[in-house]
Image 1 (cartoon, rainbow, N blue to C red):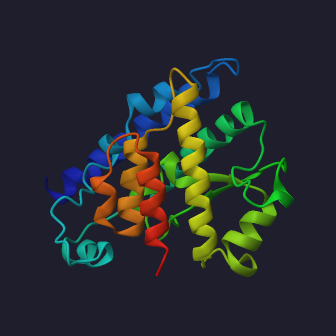
Image 2: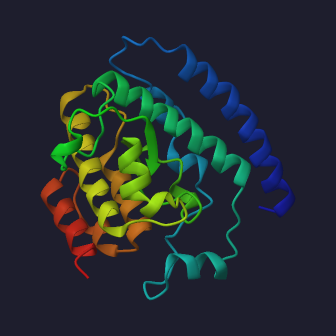
Image 3: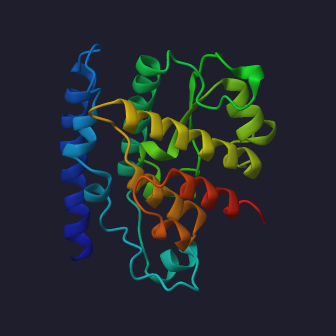
Length: 225
């Protein structure tokens, strides 16, 4: 695809997404058990950013190195727009199915606290290809977000230990959604993809669908060094 036609495609897609997502997200019934699941099925993560494929990346090359070598470009307007919409979906889901409580409950001090912030586990600026994935977003309290996830409220920095905790908490949310809802909005396999990109580990490509024990083990191993 030529650069000009790719840019034209992105602009057309952005216009389409704005219309589609605003209609679907703003008009859904708050009592619907499906809760926007059709939105992410109709316009899937993979279809939107299929251009960002890492299937050809050499195993001995990091994601960032590959992006530079492959000259992967990012449409910042598109990624920011889709990121904002994904945050809205996570917020709606958390309010309806989790009473608005924080997803990270390992710290008993915050159990039952209301989550008003939606946090990128892997930062949007560093991982634009997965910034719109709802599996990369987690509902936190302001204290958890600005004191724990981002040291001293510096959103340019990530607390790696708390990132580890957020991923384990997100795996719990995803498992509950899949096991308790007939039309879950989360996908185990796409969570594996987020981990594959964010942690740059091939181990996540070896985990079978639904193997939560294997998933947790792989996450813990990734943060063991």
